[in-house]
Amino acid sequence: MAVHRSVRLEFTSAFEMLDFVQVVNDHLGRDVGFDDDSIHWIGVAIRECVINAIKHGNQSDTAKHVFVEFETVLRDDVAELAICVRDQGHGFDPETLANPLAPENLLKAYGRGIFFMRQFMDDVSYSFPTKGGTVVTMVKRLRHP
Image (cartoon, rainbow, N blue to C red; front, top):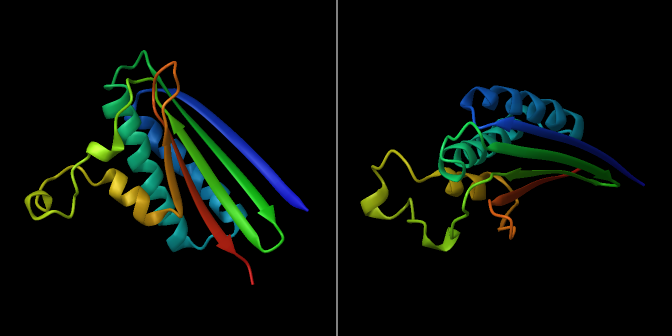
């Protein structure tokens, strides 16, 4: 039997909302059974994603919104936390991003957000709705013994 929980947030493009998103993540992560280290690294991935949505997607336009949806599923021996972050920007091509590990990029103070998301989450995918914007879906799984 699966247990499902969903939380949806919508807010203007304000960096002050990052702490609220973090609180929701921490609470749901504990509910699923993640340890403090895992919750921290999932939080880093979510913060990077929301920052990208505000800064790059919505261009810090406070008239545009960011949508964050958390879903938890607990079934048998696997717990899963899925997070979707959607902005109202013009979208982007993830394949055109510079490699943050390339020697010429190592000392740059930016360009690591998507790299962190991919490192800290089990799955990261992108979609680009026809109405505009970018949807980033991140999933972290926890196997219970």
